[in-house]
Image (cartoon, rainbow, N blue to C red; front, side, top):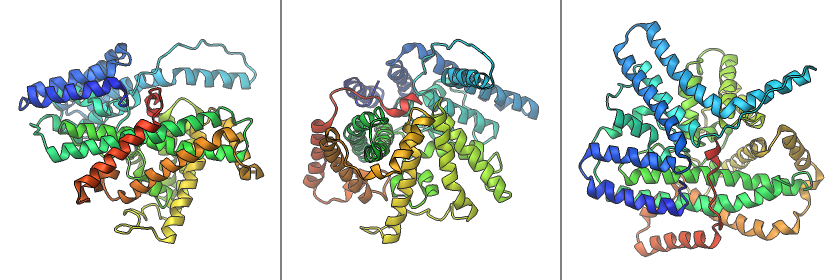
Length: 483
């Protein structure tokens, strides 16, 4: 079920009424309702994969109970190893089996041997990378004795499958989200209204910014061989805002929807395109995944302890693994690697923790220094996005070759010009709103500071009108569903 679909527009109000009016003050009934609703929400794509999320949930629920009773170090390692093996094994099979098979075959062919293997027709379950990491965080935290395991199967399964963030995050930690299923939740009107604001802004970023940018990006990248550097630069520029509008839009809708039901989900994007260096960018982009890798991969490897070379090694591992997490294509690994290379000079100079605060906090405009740093950081992100969007490494280098040539200064073809102009205007509007809301949890949170209700409602109506005018006729799935 898509957030930007008629199905969800019907599903959400019905669930809201049942949750707050029929089962109000009945915690167990509310949790059962959320569990059933989450399974309906997920099964809307393909009910067959419900068995997969159910199996993964049961495995980690049982592992948690066994870890609670087990004090022997070796036995605890075996138990957490089973959790890792099962979850990563399922993820590896569905997401990477054919990729490894093809890479293995290509390697033998390169060495002059003939090796034939048949691909399997495997459908990638929606959101498997997200809920796999979410349930793994439970087992790993229980193993590390950072979290008490739950005996309530319904609460645990509701935590794993919680529908707002099930298929594209934020990847919630068990120690944050799971305890929220244990306590009675009361309806907070102010929190719910602000949740609706966040949903509205998320929908705007998805259906107006991301979907309109996507049509331009598709035209350009699918014809990269015949277009010049200026068109390919525009395609990459629009992809940067497509993926941001799409993914941060999903996160805003998920967090806002959670708030409607009395849940607090972690912020997943903190206005990353206003970052002053690549380290700050990664503290603000896909925060739930970045912190997951930090806590469960980077720190266990040694983190920032030890020599500079060990820190560099740990950073490279995290970025490469993060890139590989995104998909079964060498382009994603290259994307992770190039981001790591951008990161390394900051580590060597020990400047990777320099920009922690919000840029130009309390000011209307950035300083020239901040502006130049933001532009340079955005340009580095653009270079990396070429790998992320390309179908192959060869296409990436072909695009780089044209962008870094004199054809960068040519006018784009006529068929792009009108679409480019109004989409750039919409992106400019989004950037302006986000700039003035950058110190908040989401861009429209500052609306509460506007004294006159009529002005606030004028803004809401303007966003709705823009969505009606510029939304695509066909429902478009979110990019990160494929991951």
